Every structure is written in structure tokens, then in C-alpha cells.
Length: 170
Image (cartoon, rainbow, N blue to C red; front, top):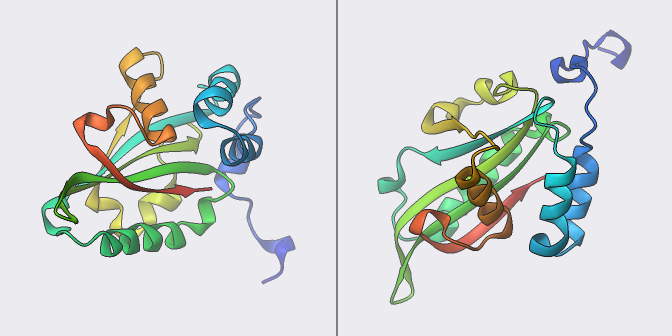
């Protein structure tokens, strides 16, 4: 099928937004997150054109103590969501308790920014979508803003958990 016959992505049909996600990705990857990228984000974020969700993996008790397996879970998710690269950004973290070189009580959680006001259909079509709890974050709530900032900066409270590793979907 040629590109001429391909239907446009549903997210491309949304009203224009002043928030430039591609510019955000560049700012995030190339500037200090706390001092430059986050102030830029809050100054430019369009809450009508984009939404923020907190995702938490439902089966953390099955993650064990080996971090590379959890990393593989994240990598697989990112690969299967390739169709959303233009419309989404995420900071997904592995947190837990480091004990004698192992990681106990691993949790897999993340902050996702999506174009539009709902979870995109591409995400809902992803097989493992049902393995996560997706919670919309109201960015007007100071606690949610702090959570978003901590997850983007890979530091802070992080729900009382210790940062182990993070991966960025960009």
C-alpha cells in the first residue's frame, strides 16, 4: 500500500497545540532536567492538547530481583509502541530496595505524556496494556506536578521508593 492511500493517524487530526513535543524531547535530552527542561515544560505544556498519565505495572511481585529482565520488559513495550513515537513521551522507572547487590521489591512505574486527552488507541491495542494501571494526572494538583517532576528528573520522593534505573520513550 502506498503512503498516499494510508489513512492519517487519528492523533494527527486533533486541533493544533502550542506544545511542541519534538522540541520538548530535545530540551529534555540535552539540558539539565531540573534547572532548564522542567521550567520549559511547565511554561509550554498545553493541558488541552496533551495529557499526562501515571502507569504502574500490576505484577511487580513477579519481577524478582534481576533488573535486566525488567529492562527487557520496558524495551519490549517501547518497541511495540513504535507507532506512538510522534505522539508520546515517557519516563519509565525501575524502583526498589537495594540489598547486598540485589534489588528487592522491584516496581515498574512511569509518567507518560500523550497527545490528546485520552489514552491513545495504539496503546490500548498493545497486548500488555492490560498489565498496567493507567491513572490520569491532573497537572493542576501540586502533588501530581511534584510526581511528574521527580519522575522526569529521576530523583525526589518517587513514591517513597529508591531509584534503580530509568528509560526514556522518545
